[in-house]
Amino acid sequence: MNVSTEPNAERSANPMGGDLVKRHRLSTRLWHWLNAFTIFTMIGSGLMIFNAHPHLYWGQYGANYDGSWLDIGSDGTHGWVRIGPLTIPTTGVFGISTGTDGMPDAHAFPHWITLPGDYDLAKARRWHLFFAWVLMVPWLLYFIWSLLNRHLSRDLAPTRAELAPKHILQDIADHARLRFPTGAAALHHNILQKISYLGVICGLIPLMILSGLTLSPGWVAAWPWLYTLFGGRASARSIHFIGMSLIVAFILIHLIMVVLAGPFNEIRSMITGKFRLPKERGEQQT
Image (cartoon, rainbow, N blue to C red; front, side, top):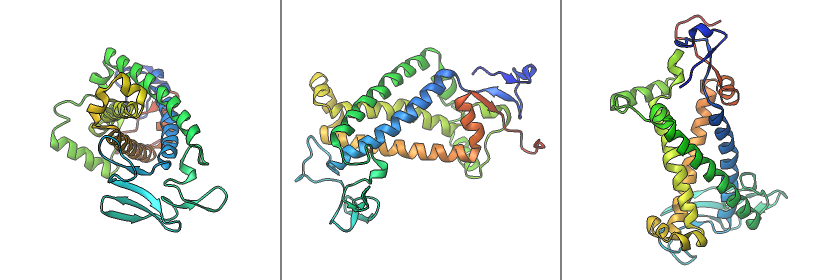
């Protein structure tokens, strides 16, 4: 990782707490914000598409009379989410909520979380398919570039020592006590960050791309092995939904950690690339 400091240039080889250093490359920052906009758009449009058939199945096809493992619906008054044999009341949020006109809206997800806000399946599909390319092409270029410049192996791949259970448990304990890295250590990803970032970049994003392609008859006609890979269209749709849920969980945890670590410093580093190294514990704050 290239490190430079401002205004203490003489410390560039050995940055210390309080120094302003270069943390993120321009390509990383651009990819981050493009991904943020793209993923939020795809989640909103994907939930609108889900509203058209709020049931999930395992198997080849999936239809109204097949056994579903997840349903979101209502009886016109009360909303509910059913997962297997478990039914959870969700009136006012999932299944039925207040629409833009102030009247009850009997859809799986409320208008304030879908794109577009009013029910429009055709528009949601157009947005979802367009932004799928915006997600897929930059991800592929970023992944190839990260392999060539060794970003994945140098900055994200965990070492054997980091994968030791004792080290992982210590990192979990430090996060639980809000003890974040300070000084030069803050420039490097900890083991929890490495695992989560690799999981998203090398796991969830390609899983979402491939399972999404399996929902397209045109791609399946060209690549019939997609059906074999996911066990059928219905299973691919379920996996796509689960993958989306995991990405939402990652985003929520990521935002919480940004707030706890210091939102101004963290957001500035992702806009300008410059990051103020936290001072060592016990060092007088100025």
